[in-house]
Image 1 (cartoon, rainbow, N blue to C red):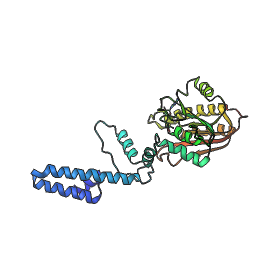
Image 2 (cartoon, rainbow, N blue to C red):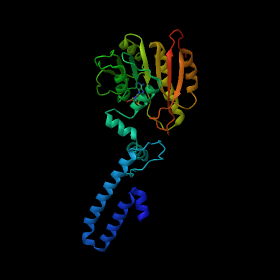
Image 3 (spheres, rainbow, N blue to C red):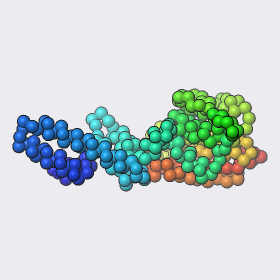
Image 4 (tube, rainbow, N blue to C red):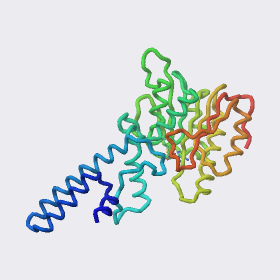
Length: 292
Ligand SMILES: C[S@@+](CC[C@H](N)C(=O)[O-])C[C@H]1O[C@@H](n2cnc3c(N)ncnc32)[C@H](O)[C@@H]1O
């Protein structure tokens, strides 16, 4: 009983021992059972909280190697939602995003990519495709100074998404379907000139079928690449989410024709159990046009 109890609730040893002991005492004296059970459940809650806060300080590989806090399944919750919830509460990036006021753990992916390749600078004009809820916009805005802090050139961040986003200072956001025929023209008009970076974190909801998801994201990525080649200034950067699965190789070949350098990166913030990675194409060469 004690062992099973410990495995299910992940209590630290002293706590589960205390609860077990109290419940045994309670069996001997039924009058005090409810009071003891209440005390025991308080100990349980307290110790689980300690346990989960300790866990959040540790790195999470995404495969559950360090997972400690567990979420009990509930009748009305799908197993996939329970898994998602468990992953969220054990994810140090989720906690850090909350602490730093960022709108999601995705923000760290852009931060890490920019730390590695340094493509965002004050004064730059950035287009962020698939920007909701706005984590990438927050990072891009800080890096290009789109809020116009004194002492640095003021840049611009233009974010578009199917969904609206809550306003972010210095970010121009629009609710648009990037795949609509007139969206690229509309974004070009909004930018009213060459753009320094086109970022795409666009993704469709997962179907659960790996190859279908891969093809859907690659379609978005290819459309974003075509757009980038139309709007980027010389030396500009294109960053896009891709899913490993085969079709990304042809995109690489096309990007290599138009950019001086093309890298495939999996930033540490990208979950290791996801086939997601990012293509970072730098040094745009405007003379060579994108052909599909
Ligand atoms: C992973 S989220 C982006 C997260 C974002 N980078 C952030 O940091 O908050 C992917 C987004 O792509 C958007 N998206 C998917 N297809 C799109 C399309 N055709 N046009 C515009 N946005 C799209 C989705 O609505 C979703 O908000």
